[in-house]
Image 1: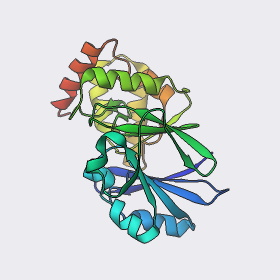
Image 2 (image 1 turned 90 degrees about the vertical axis):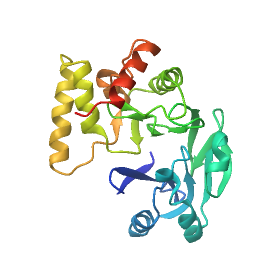
Image 3 (image 1 turned 60 degrees about the horizontal axis):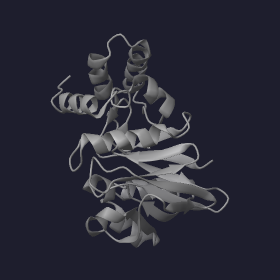
Length: 240
């Protein structure tokens, strides 16, 4: 398995470092900024060889230039967003693969949050960017509820034990909204309480399993595109 660590940056972002011990290769996924990421890799003796971007938003690509300058890392990102991603060297889409040492990741097209959003699915690990969050999903800035419904279905077809490495710590707010949708879902009630305890201790709630999302995520559990759209609109205005 890849050795994966999270680097908390900005107010609620996670940048992920995925390391293959055999080859010594390390990939950075969605670097919002550079300096804490470079420091985390250096502290572990890891050599950054590549950057994987899921989409073009600045809090996912803002560290590209400095990391490339410091390490010579190659940038891989979505084919549909080449013009918006700094220093992209390889453009990929669904059907393509990426390598971190001996570990192969499949590219998944998941437009909805942005028009060209992709995810990277390795054995046991899904780097989902801003498409799937713990008990939530991304805002539909450039896409549709139909696209989000299809994207989440692709994710949920992966093995249930797959751990999701999303890019934000939105879990407490997502849990509060989810409870307005399914207040009698005891798996959700218990998870929300566990999340509160983790955050009280300053601990992350990411990664999380797809199995957990199947049981507690109101967007994954939506029975139709229309239901997902209603829930997403309600979440957009939710202030809980």
